[in-house]
Length: 146
Image 1: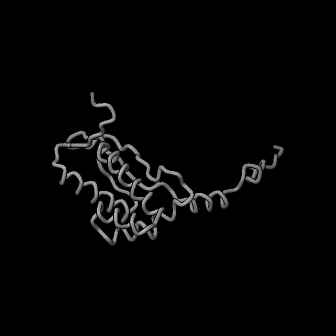
Image 2 (image 1 turned 90 degrees about the horizontal axis):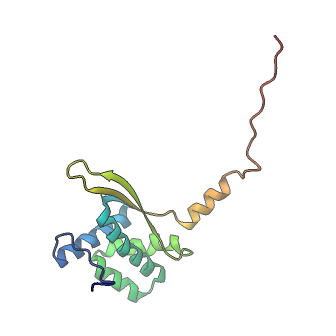
Image 3 (image 1 turned 60 degrees about the horizontal axis):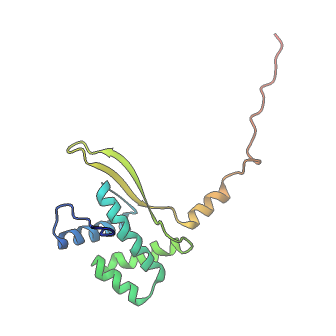
């Protein structure tokens, strides 16, 4: 039985698969959003969420683990200094997948993978938006007699 044996192969060798995932996570860190196939997006999300958790912890050990996995020191620095602190009050679920539909060439299911909005942005939007009671009411047009 293969219970709890999660594999993501997609016809690649282990080294190629790990390099592909690491590069995709680095692109996600750099741009904040990437477009890829749905299968790849689900696997990239697993690794990206782990890297953000490492960044939130922020120790030298977790930084070295992230560099060992991603192989790009500049992206790890951005992850630890800019991306991870935005999610300090969030317990998980740092990324979102939005389905786009089939790709034109081979009908592969496409998706956008992006970081969810940080806690500060959500709080700022909530403060700016008028509440339901404070919303301006539509004024009635004056009645004219004909």
